[in-house]
Length: 145
Ligand SMILES: [Zn+2]
Image: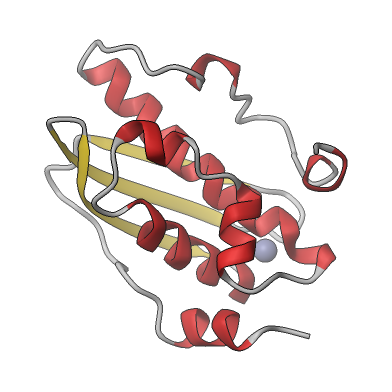
């Protein structure tokens, strides 16, 4: 049911923890399996220098957040904005359909942390204004193409 990569990231998640002087912090949750994800970003000159997360939730949510942090570490804000839940799921060699929303949560956590960063530093990040964090994107994971 779960790929080896999902198991690997669930058992040995990368970048777990928090950044005390983070430049942006995002917290999101979903009602489907009660996952709560908190993401911390350290941003220097538009580059994500460091990222940590804390996830209280199912194995897929933990694996998704671990993979998401690996995907955005060392990347620019624009590159991080381009990370979709599908990219996270693909990097994990797939998630069971019923668990796709956990990867959606990882995408939202990144964007929520970037939104916090943009507000604190009074900068504009393209694409953030379209993100709806309240919406449960479970169905979206399938019908947006
Ligand atoms: Zn979950």
